[in-house]
Length: 179
Image (tube, rainbow, N blue to C red; front, side):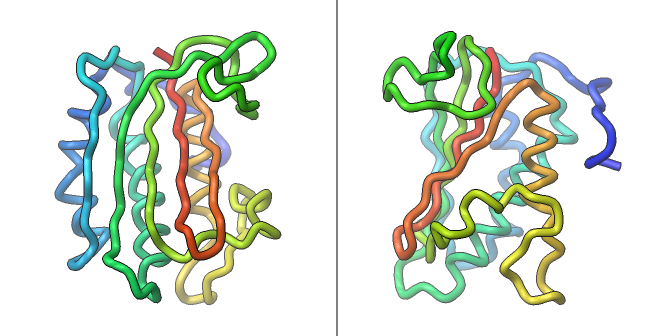
């Protein structure tokens, strides 16, 4: 149903950092023991229009994928969440980085960056990770719906999500939510 419908009834003006901190216990449970969870919030960030009940599963999917990416690594596993502001111009470019931001309309955004230091994503599949039923996991480990649903939930909020990754260097997801 999440895939097929847009739902906006629970959208309210919220503090994103506070919302995520309320989900901290679930995040720690999803990540499991041994994975450090770091927060770095922008002070005095603008509030965003968000359905907390729908945003939670989107964030849990990112944490779950990070946990799986960290499972086979020989590093001190970390999952970090930070926020910052961004402006997207009429051409679809971030005015600070001057990089194209696919799917983002012009405007101001609060950006949630979720980064892990896991195995990274093979460049040959990066363009497919938000497709329905696409997965690199064993059949009993994943359905290929998690990132697709996260993408849909964020899009329903007028936002966008994109990934940066290099094999062996972890993955960074940028979730942009309009302010």
